[in-house]
Image 1 (cartoon, rainbow, N blue to C red):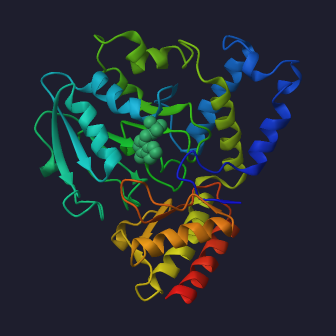
Image 2: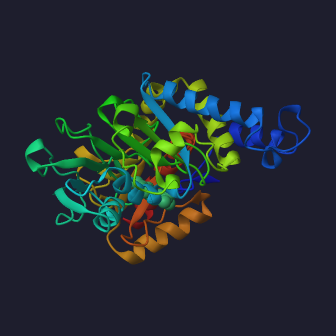
Length: 358
Ligand code: PLP
């Protein structure tokens, strides 16, 4: 089947096959990775290799730590302000969709917050302008959601925020295109889109910023605890990290992020082209300059037609095309592991559906 699920999302077939082969007897050790101590040399090495692979694929120099944490990206919404929102500072948030809003709401329980910019009034149809003038005084950081999974928008470029530390939710963005990630003091991503299975959340943080984190919160909530202990302070989600390891090797073998970006643009282009050439039969939701190549969202003339589209798509082998329940419409999530032919097949199906129902 063609898997366009928004997350947990498609994984490369090679990765699933490799994991299957290793499942019972991991690298000839006679037991499964699931049964192995996280203190064993085997797991320690795999953990370290995964951290190094990620930094290398993201093209980050020394001075950044990769942390593997639990609790999903949503837990980062709370951990970020716990670690960095000191009482005399204000956390700045850019609201571009419902996950951005959730991040803002969690911070508001913990300290002073400020909405630096928002596209809510515009129905989340794009990314608002953001400049240093929009930020509060004494800003602890500014948080952005680089790609908005539900709405289908993304920042064309990383915004310039002067000296204020920039923090990014990269859950549906990471490894999808080449960016100068050194502009971020920290970013995080739930693995279940471009990195691997649900269960591990990746945090990448600049060491010099980490030094400024609170030392008054419980140790298990501190980024520094995870950094100091190489993410082995407590039992990590070992198997999810292993699957991420395989996905990173796959991404490397695909030619790295630049190649993936090229393919992603071509894949998404096939679908956006059908939308744009459909004379209004399909209506793209997002301002074209802010469209995401990862999550492509559109509507049809009425909900009855949208229901028919979803039902028919399912019988034609397409999975996961219904829009998020909060917004309706249609959404195709074309992450890195979605093959070119899935997008070609979807574009052909959309053309055919429009011909029959237009
Ligand atoms: N942020 C973004 C951009 C997301 O797409 C998601 C989930 O889809 C989340 C945060 C929440 O992630 P989790 O379910 O891992 O908590």
